[in-house]
Image 1 (cartoon, rainbow, N blue to C red):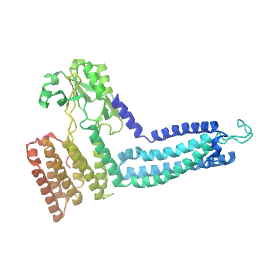
Image 2: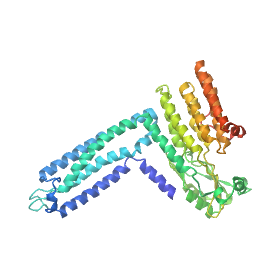
Image 3: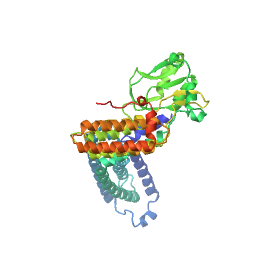
Length: 474
C-alpha cells in the first residue's frame, strides 16, 4: 500500500495541475475567511488602520477588476512561455526531459500564484456593494482588508513573474538540467540502496550460501510461470503486498523483471513455487503487486536518471548539436554518482518474511550493469571526440579509488572492461596520432589506478561474462 501511495504521489508531483489546484483551493478558503473577518470587524477597529484600503465601492471594484484581468493575462503569457521552454527542452535534450520541467515546483507555484490571485479577486469582487444596492444596507459594504490583501497578492504576483523569467532562463540551460537530474540520481541511490523487499538474508543471520540452500531443491521443476495481465513499464513493486500474498499461499516467488523494464501482457512476470498454487486468483493477486504505467518513473527505477544523463550526452554528441562539453558534464555527473554508489551496500537477492521464511528471490541491479549503462553508449558515440574519450578514462580512474576494497570484484572487472574498450575504440575513432597517444596515456593511468587500489587484481579473478552491456557493440 505504501508503494502505491508513493507511486500516486509521484504522478501528482509530475503533473502541472496539482500544485495550482491546491493553491486555487487555498485562495477560495482565504477569500471566504477574509470576507468573514471584514464583516465581523465592520465599523470598528478596521477603519483605524492606516495601511488598509479606505476607498469606496467603485474604487474597490476597479482595483480588483484590474488586478484580476492583469493577472489572468500574465498567466496566459506564463503558460505560453512554459510551452516554448518545453518545446526547446524536448528538441535539445529529448522528450524524456519534459518530466523534469513539468514536475519543477517553481513553475507549478508560479502558475498557481497567478490562478490563486485571479480567483481571490473574483471572489472578493462579488461581495463589494454600494449604498442602496441589494443586500448592502444603507451604507454599502466594502471589504477593506480583503481588498488590501488583493493589492498584496498583486505585488507578490509581480515578484513571482520576475522570478519566473529568471527561472525559465536558467532551467533551459544544459548545466542546470544536468545538475537537476544528477541530484535526482543521488537521491534515488540514497533512497533505493540498500532498498529491500522484506528482510535480507544477513538480517536473519544467514550468509548468501545459506540463503541459497533455502531455495527448494525442486524449484526449477515445480515452479510455474506467472504471466502479466497488463502491458507497460514496471514502475514499482509493492513489496508489502507481494510478501503478504507469498506468505498466505506459502510461496517462493522469483521475480523476472526490474523496475524500469517493459512488460508485455501474457509474457513472463515471475515464477512461483509450488506451481500447484498458481491459479487465476493467485495470478491476479501477484499482478496487483506490480505497478505498470505508460512511462518510467523515479519511484524504484535507478536506471532511469542514468539513462536520462546518457541521452543528454548522446544528443550533445550528435552532428546536429556537436557539443562535447555538455557530454563531458554528463560524464562528470555520472562519475560522481557512481562514486557515491560504490560506497553503498547492495541488497541481497534473497528476501525473507517476518517469520524467517524465504519468500522472494529478486536479483538486484548491480554496480557493473550501471557502469555499462552509463558509459557504453557514450563510449560508442563519443569515440571520435578526444575530449569525451579522455574524460571517460579519467572518470574510470576516479571511480576505481572508490570501488577498491568494497569486496565486489565484478565492479572492478566492469571498470577495466570499459577502459580497455575505450582505448580500443580510439584507434578507429581518432584519426590524429597525437590524439590517440593522449588516450593511450589516459588508459595507462586508469589501469595504474586500478592496480594501485588492488582493483585490478580483483577484476582479474572476477567472471567477466557475469555482466552484460545495455547497448551492444557497433
